Each structure stands twice: as structure tokens, then as C-alpha cells.
Amino acid sequence: MVTPVKKGVHVPDRYNGDLLDGAIYTLNMDYLILNLEGNPLTESTNDLKVELADYGTKVYKERAALTYQGEVFGTIVFKPRSSVIPVNLVQLQLENHLFYTKKPKELQNMVAQVVDILGLEYKGINRLDIALDFSGKQHDIPTLLMGIFTEKYLISGREKDFNVYTKTCKGRIEFNGVQIGKRSASRFCRIYNKSKEMLRG
Image 1 (tube, rainbow, N blue to C red):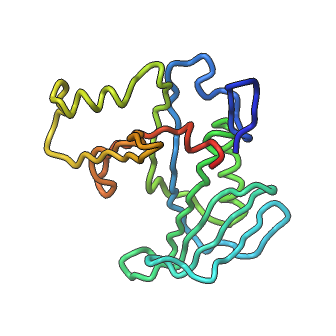
Image 2 (cartoon, rainbow, N blue to C red):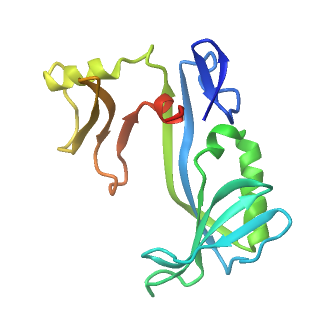
Image 3 (cartoon, rainbow, N blue to C red):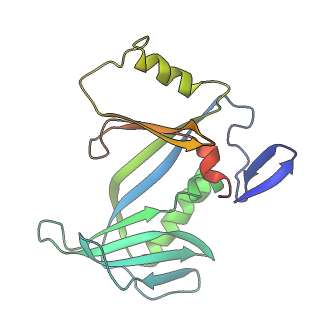
């Protein structure tokens, strides 16, 4: 969803006021899964709404959506199906919008409070994605890709997957994103137009 600010300019409805405002680049967390330990609370409280799903996942028997102080907060999975995974391991995935609508300290406090209410102990990070946000004025990605395809530029390092995503718009090819490497690897790069993702469909 977007909110019109002035003609030709849009920002997300929930906006923390600092995304690329006067900056060339911003470095943000974009995806986070935390490893926790214990037996999570499964009943709602005044501040935390816990909604158990009918089904878990392939790896966990139980899954629950969390809403903290009226705001969608994240999802926890627990009770592993495999004996290889510690029986008390709980994973919490935060909602993506929180990284762009909350100040870092505010989000840190929210996570600490939710973990405390759930009666769990923090053990570490399971997955962390970092986003380097920049404007198309700084980097012309379609032109860069053309340079790669014509071998004007070379990609260093070992052999890796390189996938470009496009779609047609009024008969023309429109760039949608590029992914370098595999998602299953410890590191991979994905470049996409976040402005399009934020706009109403």
C-alpha cells in the first residue's frame, strides 16, 4: 500500500521516515529467523495474540502466527518432527515490514518482550538477509546487465547460477530482478525493484 505525498511521489503507508531520504545507500535487515529454546506459550495475553495454525510445516509439527500490541509480528514454529533437531528448538521469523517501519532499538525491544512473554530463551540467529537499498539514479541495473551479457563486464569467482527475471509490458521486456548464486548456499545475491513491490497492484 502507498500513500500519496505529492504529485509523482509515493511512500509506503507504514514508513519509518529514513529510507533513502537524502542518502545514496541504506543498509537494512530484510529477513530474520531467530533460534529460541523452550516450550512456547500458546495462549494469547493482553499484549500478544497467539494463533495456532491447523497444520505445521514439513520440519515442525506446530506453527503459530504472532500479533504484538495489535500489529502482525511474526511466526513461530516448534515441536520438530525429526529427532535430529533439539526437541526444545523454536524458530521465530519476523515480519518483513517491521525492518522498514520500526527503528532498530524499538524493534530490538519488541523482540525481547515477545520472547519473554513466550517464555523462551534466545539462542542465536538462524538466517539473516541484508538489503542494500539504492535509487536507480545511482545505478542503472538494466544497463549493467546488458554489459554482462555482451561480456563488457565479467563476474568474478567460481562458477555460479545467474538468473534474470523479466516480464512483458505492452510488448516490451521489463526487468524484474536478477539472482546470483543459489538460495540454498550460505551467500547469494538478489537484486529487484523494491518500489514496485511496495506499490499497489
